[in-house]
Length: 344
Ligand SMILES: Nc1ncnc2c1ncn2[C@@H]1O[C@H](COP(=O)(O)OP(=O)(O)OP(=O)(O)O)[C@@H](O)[C@H]1O
Ligand SMILES: [Mg+2]
Image (cartoon, rainbow, N blue to C red; front, top):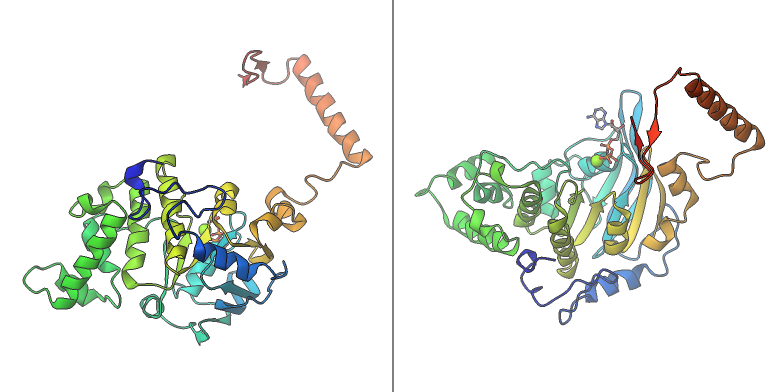
Protein backbone atom coordinates (compact mmCIF):
# COMPACT_ATOMS: atom_id res chain seq x y z
CA UNK A 1 0.00 0.00 0.00
CA UNK A 2 1.49 3.37 -0.90
CA UNK A 3 2.23 5.18 2.34
CA UNK A 4 0.84 8.48 1.05
CA UNK A 5 -2.61 6.93 0.66
CA UNK A 6 -2.94 5.91 4.28
CA UNK A 7 -5.32 7.78 6.56
CA UNK A 8 -3.85 9.74 9.46
CA UNK A 9 -3.06 7.48 12.37
CA UNK A 10 -2.41 4.60 10.05
CA UNK A 11 1.05 5.60 8.91
CA UNK A 12 2.88 2.98 10.89
CA UNK A 13 0.17 0.44 10.37
CA UNK A 14 0.00 -2.32 7.89
CA UNK A 15 -3.65 -3.18 7.48
CA UNK A 16 -3.76 -6.90 8.01
CA UNK A 17 -5.65 -8.53 5.15
CA UNK A 18 -6.96 -11.28 7.39
CA UNK A 19 -8.14 -9.34 10.36
CA UNK A 20 -8.40 -5.82 8.99
CA UNK A 21 -7.27 -4.62 12.37
CA UNK A 22 -3.83 -3.43 11.39
CA UNK A 23 -1.02 -3.10 13.85
CA UNK A 24 -1.85 0.33 15.10
CA UNK A 25 -2.08 0.50 18.89
CA UNK A 26 -5.60 -0.11 20.09
CA UNK A 27 -6.80 -0.77 16.53
CA UNK A 28 -9.37 -3.41 15.76
CA UNK A 29 -11.39 -3.25 18.97
CA UNK A 30 -14.60 -2.10 17.26
CA UNK A 31 -14.16 -4.88 14.72
CA UNK A 32 -13.75 -7.47 17.45
CA UNK A 33 -16.79 -6.09 19.26
CA UNK A 34 -18.88 -6.13 16.09
CA UNK A 35 -17.91 -9.70 15.30
CA UNK A 36 -18.35 -10.88 18.89
CA UNK A 37 -21.85 -9.36 18.98
CA UNK A 38 -22.80 -11.28 15.85
CA UNK A 39 -21.13 -14.55 16.78
CA UNK A 40 -24.24 -16.25 18.14
CA UNK A 41 -26.68 -14.81 15.59
CA UNK A 42 -28.15 -17.66 13.49
CA UNK A 43 -27.42 -17.56 9.75
CA UNK A 44 -31.05 -16.99 8.85
CA UNK A 45 -32.75 -14.56 6.53
CA UNK A 46 -34.37 -11.73 8.48
CA UNK A 47 -32.71 -12.77 11.73
CA UNK A 48 -32.84 -10.32 14.66
CA UNK A 49 -29.57 -8.60 15.58
CA UNK A 50 -28.49 -7.82 19.15
CA UNK A 51 -28.31 -4.06 18.53
CA UNK A 52 -29.83 -3.07 15.19
CA UNK A 53 -29.25 0.46 13.87
CA UNK A 54 -31.53 -0.04 10.87
CA UNK A 55 -34.64 -2.20 10.70
CA UNK A 56 -36.43 -2.76 7.38
CA UNK A 57 -39.97 -4.11 7.31
CA UNK A 58 -41.89 -5.34 4.25
CA UNK A 59 -40.31 -2.92 1.80
CA UNK A 60 -41.22 -3.34 -1.84
CA UNK A 61 -40.42 -1.23 -4.87
CA UNK A 62 -41.63 -2.09 -8.34
CA UNK A 63 -40.86 -0.52 -11.69
CA UNK A 64 -43.70 -1.42 -14.03
CA UNK A 65 -43.97 -5.17 -13.78
CA UNK A 66 -40.51 -5.60 -12.28
CA UNK A 67 -40.06 -6.08 -8.54
CA UNK A 68 -36.73 -4.39 -7.86
CA UNK A 69 -36.90 -4.75 -4.07
CA UNK A 70 -38.99 -7.04 -1.89
CA UNK A 71 -37.43 -7.28 1.56
CA UNK A 72 -39.60 -8.79 4.30
CA UNK A 73 -37.39 -8.09 7.27
CA UNK A 74 -33.79 -7.00 7.58
CA UNK A 75 -31.79 -5.73 10.55
CA UNK A 76 -28.40 -4.09 10.29
CA UNK A 77 -26.17 -4.40 13.34
CA UNK A 78 -24.80 -1.17 14.78
CA UNK A 79 -21.08 -0.56 14.68
CA UNK A 80 -20.27 -3.27 12.16
CA UNK A 81 -19.56 -3.45 8.46
CA UNK A 82 -22.39 -5.20 6.64
CA UNK A 83 -21.49 -6.27 3.10
CA UNK A 84 -24.45 -6.16 0.73
CA UNK A 85 -23.85 -8.40 -2.25
CA UNK A 86 -25.82 -9.88 -5.12
CA UNK A 87 -25.75 -10.21 -8.89
CA UNK A 88 -26.36 -7.21 -11.17
CA UNK A 89 -29.94 -6.02 -10.91
CA UNK A 90 -30.46 -7.67 -7.49
CA UNK A 91 -31.88 -4.45 -6.05
CA UNK A 92 -28.95 -3.29 -3.91
CA UNK A 93 -28.85 0.28 -5.21
CA UNK A 94 -32.64 0.54 -5.16
CA UNK A 95 -32.61 -0.50 -1.50
CA UNK A 96 -30.00 2.19 -0.76
CA UNK A 97 -32.11 4.74 -2.64
CA UNK A 98 -35.15 3.85 -0.53
CA UNK A 99 -33.35 3.84 2.82
CA UNK A 100 -31.80 7.26 2.20
CA UNK A 101 -34.87 9.03 0.84
CA UNK A 102 -33.79 9.15 -2.82
CA UNK A 103 -36.72 6.94 -3.82
CA UNK A 104 -40.10 6.03 -2.37
CA UNK A 105 -41.33 2.45 -1.88
CA UNK A 106 -44.63 0.91 -2.92
CA UNK A 107 -44.99 -0.57 0.55
CA UNK A 108 -43.07 -0.90 3.76
CA UNK A 109 -41.34 0.96 6.53
CA UNK A 110 -37.86 1.23 7.92
CA UNK A 111 -36.37 2.86 10.94
CA UNK A 112 -33.09 4.13 12.27
CA UNK A 113 -32.65 3.86 16.05
CA UNK A 114 -36.33 3.08 16.20
CA UNK A 115 -37.25 6.32 14.37
CA UNK A 116 -39.21 5.84 11.14
CA UNK A 117 -37.24 7.19 8.17
CA UNK A 118 -39.76 6.67 5.36
CA UNK A 119 -41.13 9.76 3.59
CA UNK A 120 -38.13 11.89 4.57
CA UNK A 121 -36.08 13.74 1.96
CA UNK A 122 -32.39 12.80 1.59
CA UNK A 123 -31.16 15.89 3.48
CA UNK A 124 -33.51 15.09 6.38
CA UNK A 125 -32.26 11.51 6.47
CA UNK A 126 -28.68 12.83 6.41
CA UNK A 127 -29.44 15.19 9.28
CA UNK A 128 -30.58 12.23 11.34
CA UNK A 129 -27.23 10.58 10.67
CA UNK A 130 -27.72 8.28 7.67
CA UNK A 131 -25.79 9.07 4.47
CA UNK A 132 -24.88 7.23 1.30
CA UNK A 133 -22.47 7.46 -1.60
CA UNK A 134 -23.35 6.68 -5.19
CA UNK A 135 -22.32 3.82 -7.44
CA UNK A 136 -21.71 6.34 -10.21
CA UNK A 137 -19.90 9.13 -8.50
CA UNK A 138 -21.97 12.27 -8.18
CA UNK A 139 -19.13 14.70 -7.53
CA UNK A 140 -20.05 17.84 -9.39
CA UNK A 141 -17.31 18.20 -11.94
CA UNK A 142 -17.64 21.97 -12.42
CA UNK A 143 -17.35 22.71 -8.73
CA UNK A 144 -14.03 22.57 -6.96
CA UNK A 145 -13.18 19.79 -4.57
CA UNK A 146 -13.73 22.12 -1.60
CA UNK A 147 -17.07 23.34 -2.96
CA UNK A 148 -18.18 19.72 -3.33
CA UNK A 149 -17.29 19.15 0.30
CA UNK A 150 -19.29 22.18 1.45
CA UNK A 151 -22.28 20.75 -0.37
CA UNK A 152 -22.12 17.80 2.01
CA UNK A 153 -22.27 19.85 5.19
CA UNK A 154 -25.07 19.08 7.60
CA UNK A 155 -28.38 20.67 6.74
CA UNK A 156 -26.76 22.42 3.81
CA UNK A 157 -29.49 23.77 1.57
CA UNK A 158 -29.18 25.52 -1.76
CA UNK A 159 -29.21 29.10 -0.61
CA UNK A 160 -26.67 28.78 2.19
CA UNK A 161 -24.48 26.69 -0.05
CA UNK A 162 -24.45 29.44 -2.67
CA UNK A 163 -23.58 32.01 -0.01
CA UNK A 164 -20.70 29.82 1.04
CA UNK A 165 -19.24 30.23 -2.43
CA UNK A 166 -19.09 34.02 -2.15
CA UNK A 167 -16.25 35.21 0.10
CA UNK A 168 -17.21 38.13 2.31
CA UNK A 169 -20.64 36.76 3.09
CA UNK A 170 -19.26 33.79 4.98
CA UNK A 171 -20.66 33.27 8.39
CA UNK A 172 -19.24 31.38 11.34
CA UNK A 173 -21.02 28.21 10.35
CA UNK A 174 -19.56 28.30 6.88
CA UNK A 175 -16.10 28.95 8.26
CA UNK A 176 -16.48 25.95 10.54
CA UNK A 177 -17.67 23.89 7.59
CA UNK A 178 -14.64 24.92 5.57
CA UNK A 179 -12.32 23.92 8.39
CA UNK A 180 -14.05 20.61 8.73
CA UNK A 181 -13.89 20.08 4.97
CA UNK A 182 -10.16 20.78 4.98
CA UNK A 183 -9.61 18.32 7.84
CA UNK A 184 -11.42 15.63 5.90
CA UNK A 185 -9.59 16.46 2.67
CA UNK A 186 -6.29 16.10 4.52
CA UNK A 187 -7.39 12.74 5.87
CA UNK A 188 -8.26 11.56 2.35
CA UNK A 189 -5.10 13.12 0.86
CA UNK A 190 -7.13 15.47 -1.28
CA UNK A 191 -6.20 18.75 0.42
CA UNK A 192 -3.71 19.71 -2.28
CA UNK A 193 -6.55 19.45 -4.79
CA UNK A 194 -9.03 21.62 -2.90
CA UNK A 195 -9.23 24.31 -5.60
CA UNK A 196 -9.23 21.95 -8.55
CA UNK A 197 -12.42 21.12 -10.36
CA UNK A 198 -13.76 17.73 -9.31
CA UNK A 199 -13.92 16.86 -12.99
CA UNK A 200 -10.12 16.77 -13.15
CA UNK A 201 -9.84 14.07 -10.45
CA UNK A 202 -9.20 10.42 -11.27
CA UNK A 203 -12.01 7.93 -10.73
CA UNK A 204 -10.44 6.76 -7.49
CA UNK A 205 -9.97 10.29 -6.21
CA UNK A 206 -13.62 11.01 -6.94
CA UNK A 207 -14.61 7.98 -4.89
CA UNK A 208 -12.46 9.32 -2.05
CA UNK A 209 -14.09 12.74 -2.46
CA UNK A 210 -17.55 11.11 -2.28
CA UNK A 211 -16.62 9.35 0.92
CA UNK A 212 -15.08 12.49 2.40
CA UNK A 213 -18.16 14.50 1.45
CA UNK A 214 -20.47 11.93 3.05
CA UNK A 215 -18.57 12.44 6.33
CA UNK A 216 -19.26 16.20 6.34
CA UNK A 217 -22.60 15.61 8.05
CA UNK A 218 -21.09 13.57 10.93
CA UNK A 219 -23.08 10.45 10.00
CA UNK A 220 -23.68 7.46 12.22
CA UNK A 221 -24.62 5.18 9.34
CA UNK A 222 -22.73 5.27 6.05
CA UNK A 223 -23.96 3.38 3.01
CA UNK A 224 -21.31 2.93 0.33
CA UNK A 225 -22.47 1.79 -3.10
CA UNK A 226 -19.53 0.05 -4.79
CA UNK A 227 -16.85 2.43 -3.50
CA UNK A 228 -14.15 0.33 -5.17
CA UNK A 229 -15.74 0.06 -8.62
CA UNK A 230 -13.49 1.41 -11.34
CA UNK A 231 -10.78 2.37 -8.88
CA UNK A 232 -7.13 1.90 -9.75
CA UNK A 233 -5.80 -1.08 -7.71
CA UNK A 234 -3.21 1.21 -6.11
CA UNK A 235 -6.05 3.11 -4.44
CA UNK A 236 -8.26 0.18 -3.42
CA UNK A 237 -6.24 -0.71 -0.32
CA UNK A 238 -6.38 2.92 0.73
CA UNK A 239 -10.15 3.00 0.21
CA UNK A 240 -10.54 -0.23 2.17
CA UNK A 241 -8.50 1.28 4.98
CA UNK A 242 -10.80 4.30 5.02
CA UNK A 243 -13.88 2.07 5.20
CA UNK A 244 -12.39 0.14 8.11
CA UNK A 245 -11.59 3.44 9.79
CA UNK A 246 -15.30 4.34 9.72
CA UNK A 247 -15.98 1.27 11.85
CA UNK A 248 -13.06 2.18 14.11
CA UNK A 249 -14.81 5.50 14.70
CA UNK A 250 -18.00 3.71 15.72
CA UNK A 251 -19.99 4.17 12.53
CA UNK A 252 -22.29 1.57 11.08
CA UNK A 253 -21.29 0.78 7.50
CA UNK A 254 -23.31 -0.90 4.75
CA UNK A 255 -21.16 -1.63 1.79
CA UNK A 256 -22.06 -2.89 -1.70
CA UNK A 257 -19.22 -4.75 -3.38
CA UNK A 258 -18.85 -7.39 -6.07
CA UNK A 259 -15.33 -8.58 -5.28
CA UNK A 260 -15.71 -11.49 -2.84
CA UNK A 261 -12.14 -11.17 -1.56
CA UNK A 262 -12.89 -7.61 -0.52
CA UNK A 263 -16.22 -8.67 0.99
CA UNK A 264 -14.55 -11.40 3.03
CA UNK A 265 -11.77 -9.08 4.12
CA UNK A 266 -13.96 -6.27 5.30
CA UNK A 267 -17.42 -7.54 6.33
CA UNK A 268 -18.55 -8.54 9.81
CA UNK A 269 -21.82 -9.75 8.30
CA UNK A 270 -22.96 -10.31 4.72
CA UNK A 271 -26.44 -9.88 3.28
CA UNK A 272 -27.09 -11.42 -0.15
CA UNK A 273 -29.81 -10.13 -2.44
CA UNK A 274 -31.11 -11.62 -5.68
CA UNK A 275 -34.11 -10.52 -7.73
CA UNK A 276 -35.06 -7.99 -5.05
CA UNK A 277 -35.09 -10.42 -2.13
CA UNK A 278 -32.67 -11.22 0.64
CA UNK A 279 -31.68 -14.81 -0.14
CA UNK A 280 -29.04 -15.34 2.56
CA UNK A 281 -27.32 -13.60 5.43
CA UNK A 282 -24.54 -14.58 7.77
CA UNK A 283 -20.86 -14.04 8.47
CA UNK A 284 -18.63 -13.98 5.36
CA UNK A 285 -17.55 -17.61 5.79
CA UNK A 286 -21.18 -18.77 5.63
CA UNK A 287 -21.84 -17.25 2.24
CA UNK A 288 -19.68 -18.95 -0.35
CA UNK A 289 -20.98 -22.39 0.68
CA UNK A 290 -24.62 -21.30 0.55
CA UNK A 291 -26.43 -23.09 -2.29
CA UNK A 292 -28.97 -20.28 -2.86
CA UNK A 293 -26.09 -17.84 -3.27
CA UNK A 294 -24.18 -20.08 -5.65
CA UNK A 295 -27.34 -20.57 -7.72
CA UNK A 296 -28.11 -16.85 -7.79
CA UNK A 297 -24.64 -16.04 -9.10
CA UNK A 298 -24.12 -18.94 -11.46
CA UNK A 299 -27.64 -19.86 -12.52
CA UNK A 300 -29.49 -22.75 -10.92
CA UNK A 301 -28.04 -26.25 -11.27
CA UNK A 302 -24.82 -24.88 -12.67
CA UNK A 303 -22.64 -27.14 -10.60
CA UNK A 304 -25.05 -30.08 -10.41
CA UNK A 305 -23.85 -33.07 -12.42
CA UNK A 306 -25.42 -33.37 -15.86
CA UNK A 307 -28.11 -36.00 -16.33
CA UNK A 308 -27.43 -38.73 -18.94
CA UNK A 309 -29.86 -37.02 -21.33
CA UNK A 310 -28.15 -33.63 -20.86
CA UNK A 311 -24.77 -35.24 -21.44
CA UNK A 312 -26.00 -36.89 -24.67
CA UNK A 313 -27.34 -33.54 -25.82
CA UNK A 314 -24.05 -31.75 -25.15
CA UNK A 315 -22.07 -34.47 -26.96
CA UNK A 316 -24.43 -34.38 -29.95
CA UNK A 317 -24.09 -30.58 -30.21
CA UNK A 318 -20.29 -30.81 -30.01
CA UNK A 319 -20.27 -33.56 -32.69
CA UNK A 320 -22.39 -31.44 -35.01
CA UNK A 321 -20.13 -28.40 -34.52
CA UNK A 322 -16.99 -30.45 -35.31
CA UNK A 323 -18.59 -31.98 -38.41
CA UNK A 324 -19.56 -28.52 -39.63
CA UNK A 325 -16.00 -27.24 -39.16
CA UNK A 326 -14.47 -30.23 -40.94
CA UNK A 327 -16.68 -29.61 -43.93
CA UNK A 328 -15.60 -25.99 -44.05
CA UNK A 329 -19.00 -24.71 -43.03
CA UNK A 330 -17.89 -22.63 -40.06
CA UNK A 331 -15.20 -20.10 -39.21
CA UNK A 332 -11.70 -21.56 -39.16
CA UNK A 333 -10.45 -21.59 -35.61
CA UNK A 334 -6.89 -22.43 -34.67
CA UNK A 335 -5.37 -22.75 -31.25
CA UNK A 336 -2.00 -21.24 -30.48
CA UNK A 337 -0.16 -24.10 -28.84
CA UNK A 338 2.03 -21.81 -26.73
CA UNK A 339 -0.69 -19.65 -25.23
CA UNK A 340 -3.59 -22.06 -25.53
CA UNK A 341 -5.58 -19.08 -26.79
CA UNK A 342 -8.01 -19.60 -29.62
CA UNK A 343 -7.21 -17.29 -32.51
CA UNK A 344 -9.25 -16.28 -35.49
N1 LIG B 1 -35.48 3.98 -12.11
C1 LIG B 1 -35.68 2.73 -12.56
N2 LIG B 1 -36.60 2.47 -13.52
C2 LIG B 1 -36.83 1.22 -13.95
N3 LIG B 1 -36.16 0.13 -13.50
C3 LIG B 1 -35.22 0.33 -12.55
C4 LIG B 1 -34.94 1.63 -12.04
N4 LIG B 1 -33.96 1.50 -11.11
C5 LIG B 1 -33.65 0.21 -11.05
N5 LIG B 1 -34.39 -0.51 -11.91
C6 LIG B 1 -34.36 -1.96 -12.09
O1 LIG B 1 -34.47 -2.56 -10.82
C7 LIG B 1 -33.64 -3.70 -10.71
C8 LIG B 1 -32.68 -3.51 -9.55
O2 LIG B 1 -31.74 -2.53 -9.92
P1 LIG B 1 -30.57 -2.04 -8.94
O3 LIG B 1 -29.88 -0.93 -9.63
O4 LIG B 1 -31.15 -1.75 -7.62
O5 LIG B 1 -29.67 -3.34 -8.88
P2 LIG B 1 -28.21 -3.51 -8.22
O6 LIG B 1 -28.30 -4.70 -7.34
O7 LIG B 1 -27.75 -2.25 -7.65
O8 LIG B 1 -27.35 -3.91 -9.52
P3 LIG B 1 -25.80 -3.57 -9.88
O9 LIG B 1 -24.98 -4.59 -9.15
O10 LIG B 1 -25.76 -3.78 -11.36
O11 LIG B 1 -25.53 -2.18 -9.48
C9 LIG B 1 -32.95 -3.84 -12.07
O12 LIG B 1 -33.66 -4.77 -12.83
C10 LIG B 1 -33.05 -2.44 -12.64
O13 LIG B 1 -33.05 -2.50 -14.05
MG1 LIG C 1 -26.18 -1.02 -8.00
